[in-house]
Each structure stands twice: as C-alpha cells, then as structure tokens.
Image (cartoon, rainbow, N blue to C red; front, side):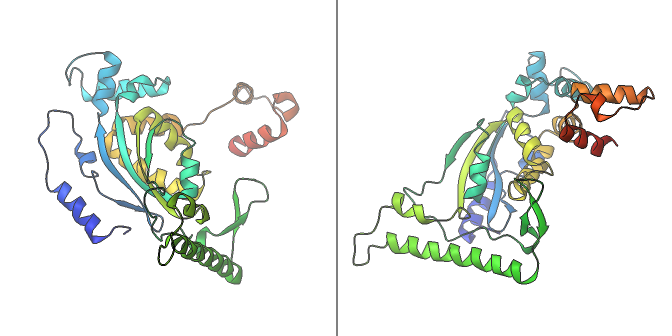
Amino acid sequence: MPLTPEQQAEIDALREAPQQTLRATVPGMEKHLYVAHQVLDHGLVRVIDYMGDDSAICQAARVSYGRGTKSVQNDEGLIRYLMRHWHSTPFEMCEVKFHVKLPVFVARQWIRHRMANVNEYSARYSILDREFYIPAPDQLAAQSSQNHQGRGDILQGDEAQRVLDLLRDDAMRSYDHYESMLSNDGQQGLARELARMNLPANIYTQWYWKTDLHNLLHFLRLRADSHAQYEIRVYAEKMCDIVADWVPAAFNAFRDYRMDAVSLSAQAAAVLKRRLAGEVVTQEQSGMGAREWREFTEQWG
C-alpha cells in the first residue's frame, strides 16, 4: 500500500472514534470513510467526507420535509425518472470529498473537469516524495495507428524493457537533480517553486477533490468508459465502486441510462426505424458521413 505506518495509524485512529450524528448516514459509505484504496503503483483514493443519500435526492425533487415520505420502491422509481429525463439539481444535493494521490499527468487530465473544489499539495511549500508512476509491462503500448489519442499493440521483450528502463532512470535522475538544487549544504539552495520545474510528469501529487453527485457522475461517465486512458480510468472505476455503495439506487439508474446506454443521432435513429420496417438503407441514403456510418455499422451491424 502507498501508506506509511504513521499514515495507517492515523486512519485507524479516525475509524475507531465514531461520532454520533443526526444527519443521514449510509452504512455502505461509512465502511469507505478514510480507507485508502490503492490505485496504480503508489496512488490512492479515499473518502474524507460525504453528505446525503438516495433519499436526499428524492427529498430535493419533491421539496418535502423529513425522510421516508414515500416507499423505497417509489424512491427508486423517482430516481430512475430523474436520471432518464436528465434532471440534474436533485443529484446536486449529495456531495463527497475525496483524497486522491495520482501522477501529475493524470491530474492535469483530471483537472479539465471544471466542476469541483480542489486543493492540491503545493511543491512551492513542501518537498515532493520520490515516487513515480512506472507502468506495468502490460500497459506499455505503442501509439495507435487509427486513434491519435489511443494505444495500439503492447510492446514486447527488449523494447518493453528499454522503455521501462528509460522511464525509471529519467525519473530517478530528475529527482536526484531536484534534491541537489534544493540542498543548502555549502550553498544557498534553489527555491522550491523553481526546483520543481525539473520534475517529470509521472511524479505523484495529491489533492482533496470535493464535488456533488451530478458532476461526479458526469466525470465517471467519461473516465470510467473503456475508451478512457487506463491511468485515469482505474481511478474512476474505484470511485464507481464507492458511489455504488453510497447511493445504490442512483448509481443503478446512472449505469442503466448513462454508462450502459446508447445515444443515437437523429439520422441514426431514422435509419434504425427504416431497418425495423424492413428497408435496406445505404450510407448515401442515411445522411451520415463515412466515419459516423462506420461507427454506426460497427455497433448495429
């Protein structure tokens, strides 16, 4: 695990000191509080705090008071209706705060989702640890020949080892220089905010990331998708497990109407209707471009 004995002891102490509360709690989420779930080689995701549950979503939608004004079955039906019809504000009533430890290049991709409160570890004030993300051999892939943002075939043998050696050696050399620039042994030492320039993008950073459920689900829809980059997808997949324990009805609806659902353009829907009516439709008759038609036929035959 990417935790020191001192960090684990702090987590254990927090979990062994429960507090009484009148607010809504979720047993499935309580088991995640403070627990560090390992991701990648040195990364982690853990829940620091949360607010709300499935019933809070329904309460907001009904603008009612109290809890249990409707049955669980009715609550699930309402949540599915809200998700199916793309309502957003009821899901914003639930919030969660994560502590995430992740490589810098993953963080820069993650931060593009501009819908959370973020506080990141500052290398201007503190010294970063000597921890770098080094991919597992089965994640070393060549550039895809068809997708400018994707991966192709897995590197094998000597080529894979050459890449691993370069990644590890470059990271260690950069950190050695970082330490050397910071050193005040016989010299003044470079400011931390300048010395960090030399560090590679696979060094680990940390942040607290707080968001509401609506925006979290949007993040997960994109980043837990099979086409997302592996290094951010594994974080999203772990967060999916956590959200499923936190708001199971909302997550099941999200999975059915977002993650596992299919979105069709007006042209694609028209083609499907014509096919169901027994008509043969070509690309020229579909109103779709070549790429869209190829994607359509790959999915629908």
